[in-house]
Each structure stands twice: as C-alpha cells, then as structure tokens.
Image (cartoon, rainbow over all chains, first blue to last red; front, side, top):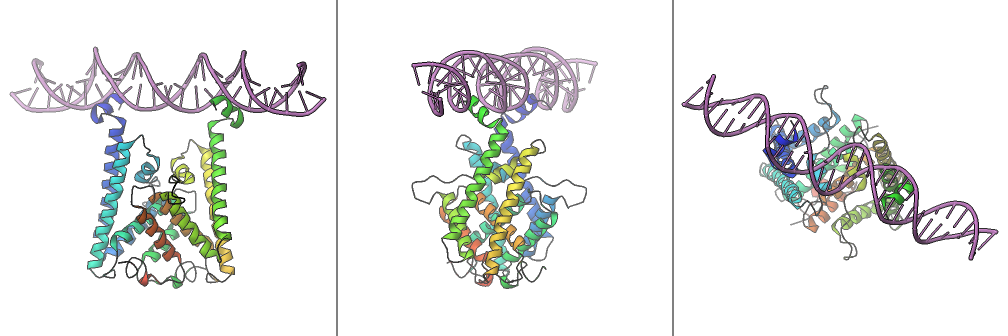
Length: 175
Length: 175
DNA sequence: CTGGTTATTGAGTGATTGCTCAAAAACCAA
DNA sequence: TTGGTTTTTGAGCAATCACTCAATAACCAG
C-alpha cells in the first residue's frame, strides 16, 4: 500500500492512528474478556490475564511467536503533547474506558463475594491498571524471562486479598 | 544555541541524548538519596520517595511548579528499536543500575531488620521499580490529583511488610 | 463485455530534520 | 592590546516526512 490509498481511507496520519488505537483497545478488552470467561472466578480471570500479559511480553506464548511490543496506549500517553490535542483526548478517553472495564470487573468480583463488600473498586481498578502498565513496561527491558514471570506472580500475590504479605514471595517462597 | 554549537559539543543527536539520559539518571538517584537521608528508616525513605514522585507528577510540590513530565528512561525504553542499538544498550544499562540501586537500598533495610532476613531483595527491587513505572506513567493521565495520591498510598500499603492486605485501603480504610 | 464506481499507484511538493562548515564572535593568557 | 584558542552563528544541503492528485487499475452489478 502506498500513501495515497491510506490517506484516501483515513484522511490523515492522525486519523489513522486514532483508528489504530481504537482497534488496539478493542483487542485489549477482548483479551481480558477471554481470560474472564475461561476461569472460575473473576479474580482468577484477572490473575490469568496478568500472567498472559507477562507471557506475551516475553514471547513465551506459543514459543514461536515474537515478544509482543510495548503497550500502544502507554506509548501514546507518554508521547502526546499540547500540540496533539485530538490524540490526547483519545488516549485519555481510552484509559478511562480501561479503568471503567476493570472497575466493572472488580464490582462483579465484589458482588460474588470474592472481595470485601466495602471494597473501593474504582480505586482498586487504578491499582490494577498501574500494575499492568508497570509489568508490561518492565518487560520491555532486556531482562531474563523469569524476572518478568516472577514480577507478575509478585503482583498477583500483592493484589490477592487472601494472602498476607508476611508470607509473600520475596521471602520464604523463593530461596 | 544553534545546531552547530550543539554538534560541536556532543557530536551527534544520539550522543546528546545519551548524555541527557545519564544526567537524568543521576537526578533520579539524587532524589532517592535525599529521601533516604531525611528519613529514619530505609523503608520510610523509600515510601517518601514514592510520595514525592506522585507529588511531582501531579505538580503539587511547591504549588507553583508545573507537573514533572513522564520518566525519560521509560519513554526511551519504549521507543528504542533494533536500529538504535546504542541507545538500547544505554537505557537497559541505566535500568539495571536503578535495579541495583534499589536492591542495595533494600539490602540495607533487610540488614537493619526492616525486612525479613530471607527477603529476595533483587526481586523486591524489581517489584518496586514496576510500581514506580506504573505510578509515574499512570500520573500522565488526565485524572484528578487525588487518584494519583491514593494510588501511591495503595502501592505503599502493598509494599509494606507489616500491613495485611485484608485491611488494605480499598476496603475498610477509605469510605 | 460494459459502464460506472472504488481502490491503488507513481510522481511529485513543500516542510521539516539531522547535520555540516566557513566565517564571525567571544574569550583569555601573555 | 595582541595572538591564539574556543564558541557560536548563519547559511545551506541531503534526506526524510506528511501529504496530494491525476492517471491507472481493480472491481462488480447489469
């Protein structure tokens, strides 16, 4: 495809990028949905999603696939400035939607009794979002695969409402 | 300053960027050192550092200062590719150094009895690093200042070896 | 096959980028 | 002040970038 076709179809580079970002978000959403559907509890699904992100980032999925690159939404968030107001709005809107998705998911978990009834799910959703961002970004480093895997497990332990941190993975469990 | 001066001083755009990254890392290091020196325990210093990052990112430092932009190292990590091998090496080396700095700091905490003696400090350091990345990146979103502040507090609670997550901030403590 | 619609292309254009360099300016020890 | 060194500058150059458009090709219902 040459530039003309693309401009005919999308209008401008920014519009194309906008469409790509939307598509990317839908893929993210789909990935979480898949994990939630294939696990017994909501929290198990979310934990599986974190593990999946770690596996994808390290390229340890089908063993033949290349590592998934950094999160497009994060990359965009870090590059937008005052002179890209359209993209700034778009990426912020998408992050809001991710937050809403996670909040709704955690609300479900709370309703099912997987979380304490007084849990502030919006707040917990932001904590999960930060973990996802931290995990995927960390995975961009040139580190052993195991460092990413263990990081995901540590995050899962931290976010698990039934595990006490005195017995967490930085101590007794390893070495 | 015009391009000629800069090229005379630094050689190339990449060399200039390299020097800027180094300087940036030294500032990071200095910031952590300051917080460690002005607090009673190592872990208190590290918690204060997380709060400081949150405050800087939201522009709530002296109330007159603009929000600190996204982390230069993270932005670089997410942008380097196979055709910028020099920068890839540099940024990975700097992340390694941050990991070593955090590991050494946590080792101190362990030696002082602030952490269990069997703590895997390198692993815990990576968890801290991921929290810092997640916090600062999250703070780039157009969200209420309080969302960032609470996120930092939640991370601090999670990383606190003396607080049980059943009594964490997403439930009983708030609302 | 035909006519009309849609998609793709090659060739280009103006703006920006990364960089160079000779000349001018600033600096500075003797 | 002078002579030599260092810094800065303006002008410019090749390459890339974002984009356009007339011409061509592909498609497709009748």
